Structure formats: C-alpha cells, structure tokens
Length: 113
Length: 112
Image 1 (cartoon, rainbow over the protein chains, first blue to last red):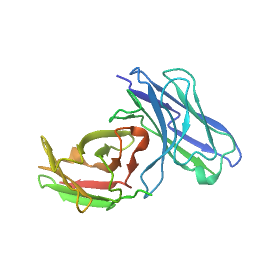
Image 2 (image 1 turned 45 degrees about the vertical axis):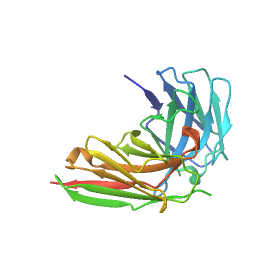
Image 3 (image 1 turned 180 degrees about the vertical axis):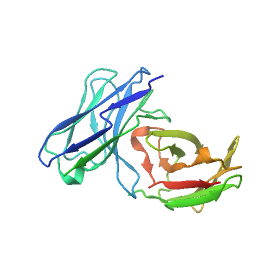
C-alpha cells in the first residue's frame, strides 16, 4: 500500500544549485500534482499533469520545471534554487483531473541556504 | 482572487468536542473539503460537502456549511489524542484537485 511516494524526504541546497524531486504513485492514477506548503499558508499548486504526456502551470510555477516521465512518475526540477523556494513540497495524484479526491505523498522538506 | 481563512491553533481536552472554523470568499465554490495532516505525513481527505448541502455527518465528524456567510466548520465529537493534527479547509469551483484553494491549516492539539 505505498500510494504516493516522494524522494527525498529532506534536502538542503545552496543558492544556485539544482535538484529534482521525485514522485511516484502506484494507484494507476491519470493526474498528478506538485504543491508547495509555506508556514501560515495553505498549499499552492506549482504544476500539474492531467494525464500522461501533458503538463500545465499552476498558481506558482516560476522557478520550476516538471516532467511526466510515465503514468507513474512526475518529477519537479529546480534549475537554480533560491532561498524563496525553501518550503515543504507535496506531490499528489488523483484518478482523473476532475476527481474530487487527491492522495498526497508525505512531503519533501527543502531548505535553500 | 479566492481566499480561505482559518485560525491557526486550537486546543481541546480529550473527550471534548472540537470545532474548527473556516471562511471562504469565492461565492461560486461548489466543493468544500476538510483534509487532515498528521506529523510527517501528507494530507488525507477527511470529508467534503457540496454547496447545496447544509450539513454532513460521518461518524464523529460533522460538517456544517453556512453558504450565506461563506462559513464552514468541522466538528469532531469525543476528540481523541489521535485527532491531534493540522486540519486544512479547501474549496473548489469544480471537483478537480488542480483547482483547490487551501486555507493555512488549523493545528489541533488534544490535551489529556
């Protein structure tokens, strides 16, 4: 019963470094999402993938890129990390993009110094 | 744009009822959700209510919606220590997870 799995759980980057956050789901879901969670704020959508082969910008896409590698995997890349990208990142999936229920991973806590 | 507001903290005694409140601004909200986040875990959907409903009950959980005042509440009866978590209110005009607007979350602490 893995559900949505994110790696790594924790990461510290220096300003300007790049890294990719990985996400995989084993529920055969069509749609996947990346959110960031900042203190005192709700989750904000960075990018989503309604189905394999498609990706679209969410509310806060600047500074990020995504790849829907296959149906299972959806990665988030920071090309040149900035301190403003210090956050907790959540990946989620849902059966379809119009589905009411999203299943979330456990989060990646990223600190950019 | 849309806004969803919640108070940040709530403490209750074990066995008491908890009431977590949420207000939203988007009058076209159709779906209203409550998510629970336990320490070190992702968000888990607890329950949701459609805007044409006033109340929904699911075991110890009761959701009340006042559409006129754009106010949503989650009542947890007989609160247990396992209920300690952050509770997020979210709203959407469609049923899609990609269009949800989340509140900042309410940290519920259950005291023995």
